[in-house]
Image (cartoon, rainbow, N blue to C red; front, side, top):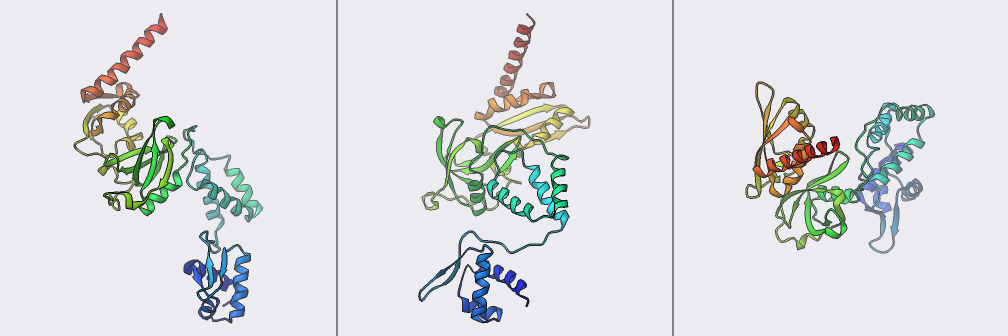
Length: 324
């Protein structure tokens, strides 16, 4: 085995083992302990975070921040990586943003000049515009980690810092829409699934799982199906809305608001939306359906219907005043 190949496989081995002795690795790779010691010193010089431990149980250990082995990319593969990152540049907050920027800087530094020029040109030729929000979502990484490792998180949540409630949640995942980040999660305070806006989370820390009285099994819940778990019959208010063909298009543009809703479409292309919401969300959905204009007519519940009607009356009065 060539030395360069041995160093790559050695890097993979130490990352996998995490703790090892020089003798153990020398036997595995069929080299002398002196050669293995030199190889480990070269790995350390390449940035692999190794440290030695003396004593009977001593040896080498890899620090938590591991270095991955070299990976070979084609030019198009390298180009696609920068393309994907460029598509996210309008978000003020991203998980692992600092690490991603550091990785791209390292990657870009080793590219040939002609490929660097192509990437620079691409940045001015294609874009993915999204709403720019002043609000920053500061806890994306911890929420994503908790959703993958199924760890409870204690948060302070509210519209403002002086209007927060402390609660423990079990995140399902995170997703972005309209420039905002959202986190569907099981809320131990409400004993139900809730949708949290991440910019309204003012603090977040992994909670002690032992303090949760009745841990919830969320292994089957993910971003594709969380709507099925989102409402309980006891807290749900039935919503029925008549939609024009244009209204159906508008609804599908923001269907994430009703992942559990259904539309019955007629032969004429119109439809009726049926879904469930919490009573506390009526003001929000009144604003939502008001934005549809005549393309959506709320049929029930009456509270939602009257809330939309009040907004329409207020708008008409404003137009009358502007003409006076």
